[in-house]
Image (cartoon, rainbow over all chains, first blue to last red; front, side, top):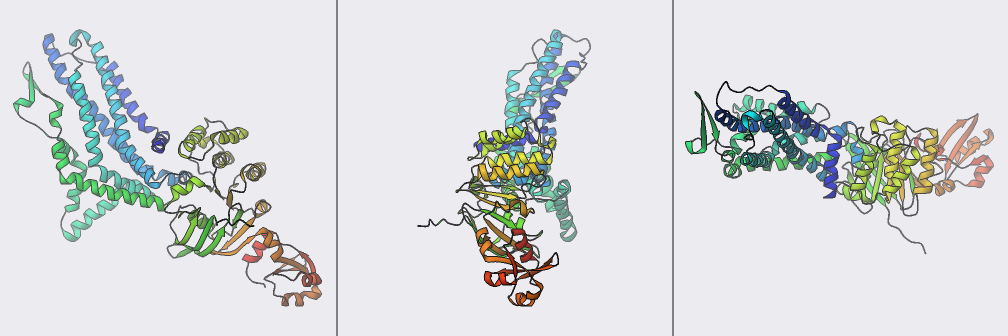
Length: 295
Length: 289
């Protein structure tokens, strides 16, 4: 356990971007809320303004969450590709391997950093950003919106949404992350290229020789199918609140929780087949890590 | 009564192939506890492959036992009792000196932090420096301080003083012998500078083309080998005495013998014992001319 903590701490020492990127992102959003202009919709009554703000608060929070999530996905991909490659390139692997730490612990810790630690950090910073922004906007627009920007129930829902996304994304993207680790432990150069070329070659080979596109379908559903597996869209009047502002209407969900689809996600065979492939690839990455020392 | 200690390192038919290249070719050797062993060989002889196998950094064929463990399968456990510096300046550039100490203290059960701090204090390198800011010699000193603060039974050093100036070199070997070495420890060391470690070693292993060509203690070398600077008149007789190597030095012919009859040699010319460097050259430059 103690060793695990040191291994994770080590990742933070080496990759300061783990916390710098979300901190800068949060800082920029806070700055925008501090100095950005805002405009109140024409000459409408205060009740309408509050209604718009209430409805818009959810959009704002989700938008912040999505922004952090996208940035995190890009960073984590880079991190996974680099984490077993960088120390082979600079030969510091010879130092790390002189420590009484198994290659299994090393690989699993790096994977957990990418799939759990980094998402939790982004989550915490996105939360902090949201709270600071809400506070700033409330203060700046106090005369219009009062304290109505704070919606405790919604905030709790967003926490639940984040935690659900972290858990399900970690499981769904396990085979992708594990593949990136295999490339990182194996490639002598051009990790980015090696992460893309073999799958691409398989797709093309299948198309040319068999005329089918099973692999292409699997890959695209894995890479692009996360939200359709983990979330659901729930139409129906009971689930939505409609706010009318003049001639426009804004639809907001009664609860964010209704979008979560844990039953569908955890009972899907795609979820568990992917996890099994991921586990096999992780075992492969560990074997490569044991055998490959320098580049 | 002689206490029989089990061999610390035992290699039987140790073989390592890279594709069609054979780096280690059925090498057999043992290293006993409490010895300082020099693994000596020309470039590409298999020194590094042997060290990597012993440290569990590479898979191999044959049987290898280090501290009762199978290195490749049990590297993490082995590293509690063995430590190594495989090549210099491999500490990561982004690491800070104090972070390095914290990390090793955190993960290594046998690391003595006060000792590392004490060793570093002597070098004048401060904790907040990043490794990338240090010269090659300073990096090596940090790595040595970290490694020598580990209470290990086996210390493996691969060219430990490469990049160090002559003062730092001699300080390093002094510390190794005076502060580090005791009866319970064993050191395996490779270096190009044979002369530098000659009076430090208790044993030598000569390796050439992936095979161990000599496995001997220094005491044995003194009694087992001799060289004679042969006077011209005696040359034919001396050559008939089966020397294993011959070389010309300052107009004299020097012949090298194994298991010599010293009285006989003395009759042929001036007898002297062999230094490791002499023996190394003699053993590895082929048969007598």
